[in-house]
Amino acid sequence: MEEVDRILLVFFLIVFPVAVAAAAGDPCSALKNFEVCHGLDERVTIAWTLHGDDDPSRKSVLEVAVTGALPARTGWLGWGINPHSLEMSGTSALIAFQSSQGAQLHSYSVSRQVKDDDISLSPQEQTEVPFQNQSVIMEGTIVTIFATIPLTNSSSTTMNHVWNFGDQVLGDSPQSHDFKKANLVSLRRIDMSKKDSVAQPLVSKLTPRQRLKNTHALLSGAAWGIAIPVGVMAARYLRPFTSPSGAWFYLHLMIQIPAYGVGVAGWVLGLKLESGSGNVYETHRNIGYAIFAGGTLQVIALLVRPKPYEKIRFLWNIYHQSIGYATLVLGVVNVFIGLSILEPAAKFKTAFIAVVISLGAVSLVMEVVTWIIYFQRKYLVRRAAAERRARAKAAQASNARARTRRFWRF
Image (cartoon, rainbow, N blue to C red):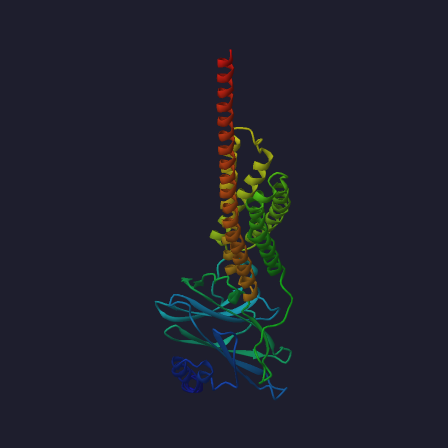
């Protein structure tokens, strides 16, 4: 009977106010019965009360509530504690979702195999973190998870919190979440014994995988997004000014060959990233394959470049320029796709956009200049040809008159 009374008391003092206030859109006012309430991020709010921490002789109990909005009605919201480190692998999690039987809440152990998508998540009766009194309420897509965690005298009150969202659940198995930046940094370390504790991100070094992503982005962006376009511009726009000496050709090679090497290094890192992740960005990957193929074909084209006087040179020029321009466009487009996946600080994307706009503006100006030079030279060539024809005609007339005079002289 006492157990029933306690459940009813919890419902009327905590769950019912949470449902009302959650509908009003203020998470912390919905969780005002807890001592501490903070936003983990812009999507998720956590509130807690640590009972018994003022008496070392008693076992403490941590009462927690986590609330957030599902990305879709078919989606899920998960929150958990990692007792070892600030990462997903090793987390004991509570995941809530809606099913045909109503709101569901199960406990899961997120292992390394689950993280790498080698095995699917399945409910666990017991997890390393001993969650008790779990419950969930759902109002539309707003989910609030409740749980208590018993603490022993040796338990640390500084805990690694992990949370995330997903769009789909198959049976009782939540499917993989997105791999956007917000999903990859949903980790916080909080001292639950401090009422003024703020859930701020832990300042830590980049993980090896994140460092690999950044290196891939830097190499690929610098090569395919900047250096290759500059090399193409050198060949197209410097030729009218350096054609007799051929300096444009050597400058073109000096830019394109190192850029190709750097780009291939970035491409190899992309393959390594793909092999170590269960998530595949197919569009980004497939365009990357096309760029690598186009760049490699250009290197092969250099090795079989015909002499200028050979008839096949005309066809070689068409092949070289069409593959080159296609690779250039795909390279710039794929850099933008990669930036949308990596989600770096806005200044990096802004800087790349500024570079692309600058190169485009210079190309536009140089295109006008080179066409003006082309038509000027074409006019001069035609005028020189006309002058030669006029001189030849005059010479022929002069010769004819001379022959006539000689004829009548005799």
